[in-house]
Structure formats: structure tokens, C-alpha cells
Image: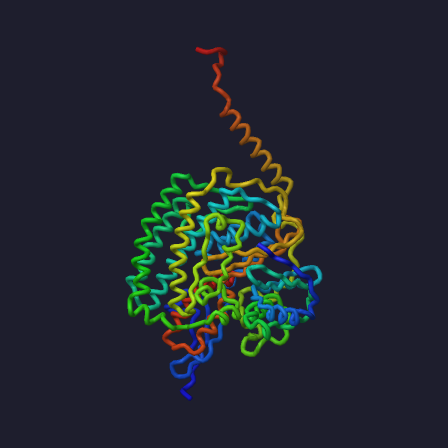
Length: 361
Length: 157
């Protein structure tokens, strides 16, 4: 039996952009056990429903996360619209899908950059983020903001995108495909990159399911869990959405799923732009959310997010609950860390694409 | 999107969770809501992308059995409910019961006050009158701007 040591990892760590703390129990260079703790940046956003009206809470929901900001706004609106039985116009559904999928591309490119950085591959990190800038430019042009969009509202959208501009976005994404392929091929072909990811942190299909993992983390282990398959509030059913699955369950497979999802998102956006109907982008919403409750789910870039709203007949909701993907991926992370090399901890922590600010809400 | 809500008794939660586990359900989330009677707890499970929610209410000083023996990842939510709302969760699995140290918040917990029943933002009669006056002034200005310009002498020049 080797020497036992406990190494504290985070909440501030050079390769960990998120404030999670892990007590790593080591035996020589192997991690025997990882004990997580969170709560360093708890913001109490859910509790703000008591002070903010249901229409104002969209702005709060969008601030749950800076990466999947649009998705949180959409998820919240979806839950309130279902509670109030509001039917959103078709054009708004298409536009929401387009913005949401652009956010997914942006999120995955950001993750690719962080993963490259964690592996010490600085130029790959910079190229990933350079391409991500192009997506942020599209956000800026269409929504007026690069991080927070403020375009979603209960009943539809605040802003439309001109058809000519949509055609421009499709053409720009088609041009970007070749550039994205160049950098993503480096992740899969470059020997240093492959050796850092292949066979590291393997989670079998059954383990991932039993640990209730979501998003690319579980799809990389072969579980077909993607809320876009059952979505009726976007246009996924009209664009023949196909989930991206891998079966190896290691870091390489997680990277592969995210890269495949970038290309699938581009395909979804281009198909949605081809089919988008003309018409209104919102409907008037009158009255207050009635007494009652509603659970809904949305596939965020990091996985399934759950939105629960409870109305009490006033302009303030009685409860808003957002269960973010990272929250339920922490048990999976703890499991994959058991038995790994100490040097692989940063890579493994990143492969769940952690967002602790989401988790802390 | 299928989402079914089933009311159960608090003492049945572990048996129900074990039965759902045996049927191949995945745990999705656990949520506590402050209600008049105490706390309303919602446990969500998923199978083939259809969600089932088990719901029950416990008094403020009530106890509830942990489901970590059936669903180990439930420790995340059970520690959250304990740390933020002070709910007494019994028999959380060894090694993942943080005894109140999972969440470290600046604001003192547990949060047990009932949410206000009336809208938090309410205008005073004076504020409402000022809003109505500003709206009327804006409408009058818009009407005046839209009206065609007329020669004070009458007729066209």
C-alpha cells in the first residue's frame, strides 16, 4: 500500500475555471476517492421570484449562466407559457431554436478551447476561441448582446431576425465548417491530444445511467438521452434532429460527441432557416400565472435542464426551480475520478463541462 | 412532453424510489417548496424521456428518508434541501452526508419564511396617477405629431 495523501483541488485552480472544491484522497499518484463541495458562489436566484414579477424573472433566468443564457431564458418562458397555456407563434419557435443552437456551438467551442488549454495545447485553445468569436459576432448582430440576449419573453420574442440576415448566418456557418473541422481534427489526430483523452475516465453505459448523468457526458457512454427528441416548443421535429452518440465512454468520446454536436447544430440551424415561416414573433400575454405547477425540460449544451414553476395567482410565482445539468453530473465526475492518475484530474473535471455558476444559481 | 405528478405519502418515498429504480427509471431531480403546511417535496424520475413526479408534503419539523440507497446521486439534492431549508433527511449514504457543510452561503440558512402572497412590487396611488398622467401626455404628443399641419389662415397657400 502506497503513501496516502489528501490534496485539496479548487475552488481556485489554474486549470479549473469553476469554483468547485474536491478533496482528492491519493495513494501515491492514484486518486482513491474524491469528495466534492460546492456553495462558494450561491446567489439565491430562485428566491428572487418572491421579489420579481413573472415577466421580470426572464432577465434573472438569463443570468443563471453566461454560456447557456438564452437556453435558461427559453426554459423559464417555456415553463410559464405552459402554466398559463400560451401558444407561441411558429416563427418564434424557429428563432428560439436557431439562437439556442448557436449557443450550443458557442458553448462547445468554448469547451474545446478549455480542454486544449488543460492539455497544455495553447494554440489549439486560441484557435477554438477565435472561431467562437464569429458566433459571438452573430449574437451581437442579431440580439444586440454577446452574452445576455434579452430577446426571450413570456409569449414569444422581443426581436425578429430579417430573412436576409438569416441567409447570411447560414452562409457564414457553412464557411465556418471547414475551419471548425481543421481544429477538431487536431483533437482527434494529434498524438499528444489522443493520449491525454483515449481510455481516460471511462464510464460505461450502465454506470452513466445509474449515476443519472446527462448531456454529452451520458451520450458519450451510449445513452440516448436528449430532450430535443421530445421537444415540442422548438422546431426540432421539423428539421429531422438526430442525437450524437458515442459508446467508448472516455474523455475522447465526450470530445467526439461535442464536436459532432457542433456540426449537427449547424445542420439544424441551416434547415431551420430554410423552413422558417413568416408571421408574428409573439402573442399578448394577459393576467397572472394561475394556481398550479408545471415541470418542463430543455436540452442545454451541457445536458438536460429542468424548470419547475408553481403559480399562486399573483404576479409573483410561488416557486421557481432550475435543475442545471452540472448539478447532476457531479456524482458522475466523482465516480470517474476514482482510480484515475492525479495528472488526469483537470482533464476529467473538464470533460463534464462543469458550470458551477449554473449549479449554484 | 409527458410529465405526470403523483401524490404519495411521505413514509412511502423510499419504497416508491426503489420500485422505480427496479423498473429502470433514472432520477432527474428533487425539489423542496415552502408551502403553508410546511414543505412540499417533488421527486422527478425519467424513463424513455417521459417524466414521473412523486409529490408529498411534510411539516416544518418533519423527517424524510434519504433515497441514496436506491439513487446514490440523490445526495446532491438531499444535502441541498438540508443545508438551504433545514429539512431533516434521514440516513443519507455514508461518505456523502455533508452534515450541513455542502453549501456554504453568505445568507444565514435555513430559509423557512413563507413567500409573500401579494405582489412584492406595488405602486402607490400617487405613483399610479403620475404614470397615467405621463401616458396621457405621451399620447397627446403623438396625436399632435400625427395630425396634418394646417395653415392658421385656413385653406392652402
